Image 1 (cartoon, rainbow, N blue to C red):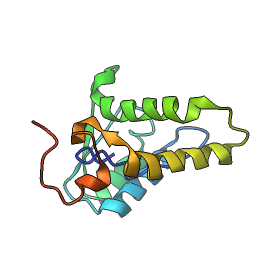
Image 2 (cartoon, rainbow, N blue to C red):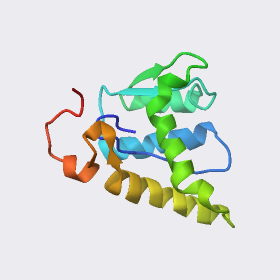
Image 3 (tube, helix red, strand yellow):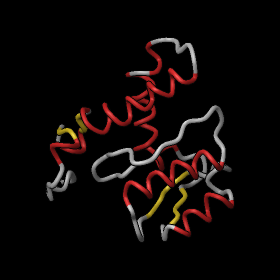
Image 4 (cartoon, rainbow, N blue to C red):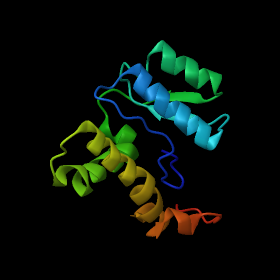
Length: 139
């Protein structure tokens, strides 16, 4: 997630959390943003401490950052995003197939969260209405 505009820029979907899963999500984010010198923050999960993920971070010229162990506030922004997705979309029904669930996650992230959701940190504006704005959402 790009923290200034609150845009999810990379994701990957699989049945389990693996190094390949997070490396694929990172590659998508890099492709979407072409960042250099950007800080990438994660928790201490084995998928984020893997050689594959670490190598991809280094290749992209990103600065790795990991929060303290067992501190939910370190990753509050993304945890909040996942929680809202669970509440607003995923927990409202049973999904018959993984493909159906994956499509719902894609639609939520790409269409609703990134384009239509109003963010309190952006002054209750949608991301597209902030585009091009130099106004900081922070007081």
